[in-house]
Structure formats: C-alpha cells, structure tokens
Length: 361
Image (cartoon, rainbow, N blue to C red; front, top):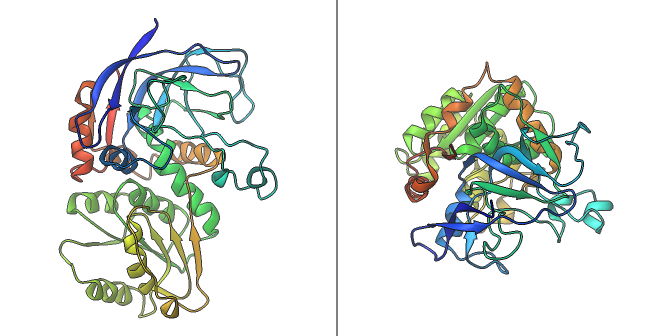
C-alpha cells in the first residue's frame, strides 16, 4: 500500500477533489492511523473559502478532527497516561508544540508556541502528506500525545473532541469555578456553543442561556443543557436581545458570557455581562471594535486559543462519563462518505447541520 484517497482543496470556493495521496514512510516514534471518522469544523469552511493564513498554500487535505485506529507504529509509544499503545487501538491525538521555547518551558502556554503545528492546512503534495483528517489514513508525528478512546465513546464524537470539545475544555479550565448562583450566557449555538452548554450545566451553573441560530441548532442547545434559548433570526435587534438577558438575570446581566460564534459578537456580548463578570472569547473570524470606556467595571476578559494535550483527554473523559446526561450524538447532524465531501462542506457552510461527519468504511 503506497497511496490512499483523500479530499483535497485545490482552489478556493471550488469543489474538493478526491485524489490519491502518497502514504509516507514513518519517522521514529510516528504512527499511521486508519481513519474511522472525521468531523468538520467552521475552520475547514474558512480555509475552503480562503484565503489561507499567511504561510499556508494549496493543495491541502481538509480536516483537523480525526479519530482512527493505529495501523502501524514506528518503535514503542505510550499514550498520555503512560500506557503502551498498539495497532488496533482507537485514538485521538494532540497538536505539537516545540517544548523548548519561552512559551512552552517558562510561561507553560504551549498553545501560543511559535513552532506549534496543527492539521488541516498542510500541503498534500509534500511529505508527510497525510496531515488532514478527510483521508483514509493520517500520519501522527512523534511529538503528538496520544489519547485512547474508550468503547463507550463513538468515533464521530471522539473526532469532534479533537477540536470543538477540547477547546471548550480549555476555556472552562481558564475560567475556573462556575458557582451555583451564576448565570452562563453562551453566544453561539454551533458545536462549540452546544458543548459549552453541557459543560456549564455539568459545572453547576444556576442558569444556562444560549443566543444563536438557526432554530434547529437551538433545539440541540436545549437538549445539551440550555434552560432558555433566543433565536437571532427571530430577534434581530441587539437591544431586544440584551433586554432578554437582563430580564433573565434580575437586571444585572450574565455572570459569565462565553462567545463561541464570531469576533463580531463580542461588543454585544459585553453589554450583556454584569459588572465584575467574566467574559470568555473563543469564537474567531470577523472584526469588531470595542469602546473601552463602556466595558463593565472589574470584568475579567479571557481569550482562548485551541487547547493543550490534557484538554483532549478531558474532552474524551467528559464524553465517556456524561453520556447518560447529555445526547452527544445529537451534535452530529449527518454522516457522509468521503466521496460526498462537497455535500458535507456545503451543509456546514449553509448552517444546515450542527456538525457533519465523514465516516470511513
């Protein structure tokens, strides 16, 4: 076996091509994984529409949310808990940081390591080729930390843990304790927002509110722990949305606001935060101006980028241990074959699904 099939972006806003891509020789400590599922993310759509971040170039294999079984290992490897891994194990794996720069070794903030490597934007025509998850196989670098997936977690949910869910775990990790009297407001009802609703509920929030769209996504938000939801499309005026939040919080505003939609939502979200509250900014894309003089007094503003390896583990553990409380499978709206990648991308771009999954036979 020297090649495998992969979904490749060759031009922005044009149909992806199913191409045969070389399978690389394994470096010491690396793995080859046979894919079981790859979920799609809003970032995949942004990269498809373009432009790519500075320094990236086409063609790329799309996808950065993989789950699969180890096909081959070069040498001996252990998982993040120190347990040996072997062919046949079902896994997810972390991004790579250099481990020796100021951010990794002193600040202990590997998410902002300048040498950090991630997936879904690497050239498909250069070694090691298979660094996108919409492919039959994927290369796992030696520096990646490995998390085994327990039997009770589906491959589709595990794949989603490799981006959306672990990012939410990072956000709550930095946020700290959610107190039993606090209201959490979530801006956005996509995969990030709906998983955030579940985690906020699990962490003991008195009340979880979600503002988002379309209505079908908000129905999932309710099943994932939201007490009340507000449809952006039905309530287009920001002043009316703020009034809804104030009425739900005794006129104070939310204790915690978590933005998981777009940067353009930040100014509005800050008007919904109480004095002294905490704002967690996760969603990306778009630009916004914030009038500093109008910021809530003594507020805390947190920005979140990606996650650290432990957050992959936390996300998998959450899926495994809370499966009786939250319908995680409802987050995956539709499953597609690799040959139907363009239908899946269109569905994500048009907000027709909460999350699409590519499943491999």
